[in-house]
Image 1 (cartoon, helix red, strand yellow):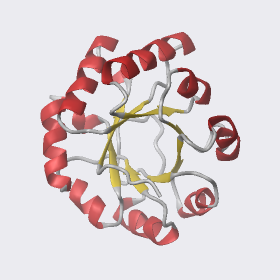
Image 2 (cartoon, one colour):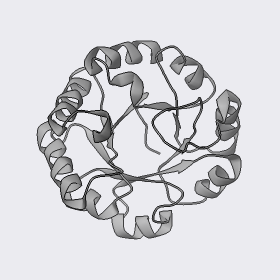
Image 3 (cartoon, one colour):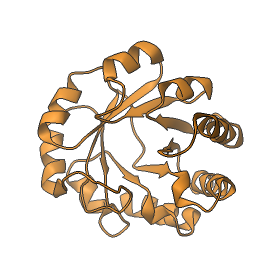
Image 4 (cartoon, helix red, strand yellow):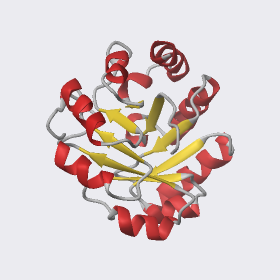
Length: 204
């Protein structure tokens, strides 16, 4: 069973003024101790996404695990280490057939039923959320709260990532509720390097 780092940063180009800013942020996160990053692009063209993914792979090297959101094809072409799929994306079974057994596969879930179903798949880790209200999605799912994280922990032995509205102020409570890792977008945007250091200190 894989061991996830406590901090799981998500890089979304929509959060930056340009791609260059995202690359600088990615480098700062890694310099501060992050060992895994997810690249999530919901609005770019396939060409743009591939170019940015390849650039991330080139700049960050192979010492960092890179996870592609949604796109199995781009994950393979860009030489990423894993794929993360949502409830409306390619099925975990189909994704695994394409990825093979060596690459990581994560699945987003938003309630107990989805998590229990995802637990039956060949996924390497599961995500649960949103734990708290979040502004990173225009149409977010229902907040599950810390109770939802605790229940998720009871339902699976797989590594568990909590996501949604997680900040330096509440991250520790999420880990204490049973999550192995916290996925963060917004609270890493201002001074990513310093923010990551503070997160890692809080998470222990």
